[in-house]
Length: 172
Image 1 (cartoon, rainbow, N blue to C red):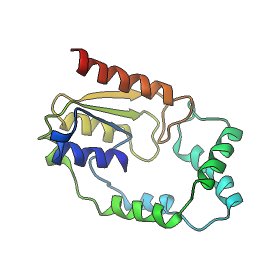
Image 2 (image 1 turned 90 degrees about the horizontal axis):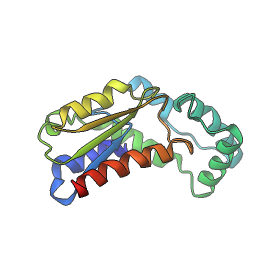
Image 3 (image 1 turned 90 degrees about the vertical axis):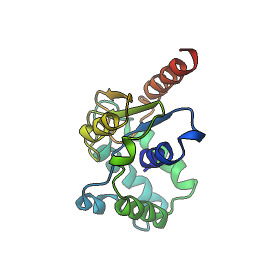
């Protein structure tokens, strides 16, 4: 959803941005068949922690995955910060109801960077490539093995790509 929001900002409010980076994104949500996999249901803290590991295995890439104990720790922190299944479902509804941004992306004059994993089980690599191809002069960076999750192992890799992209804009 964050990539879609970044696209909307780039299309309608580029004058307020210096650049935009979109990670794991698509120009529109194509398949409601995946919606059931994304919906959230009320869970106890323990159920939430137990569901976090298989969900990460489903969406995360096989090579970049954090170990299961680390995932359980993440789940405990996320759950303690306030897990709200209704909020998750409102996000799913917003994504499902959003319209295509393809024509708007063709008009973006802002420096944009699209990062996408080669093993994204939710949004195919081609979706990220298509976003980058629609935006004039956008950079596309595929990350080998990355799924639809940012693991502790991948966070520094993504930060490095974003940092380099921004540095090139400010020093060039």
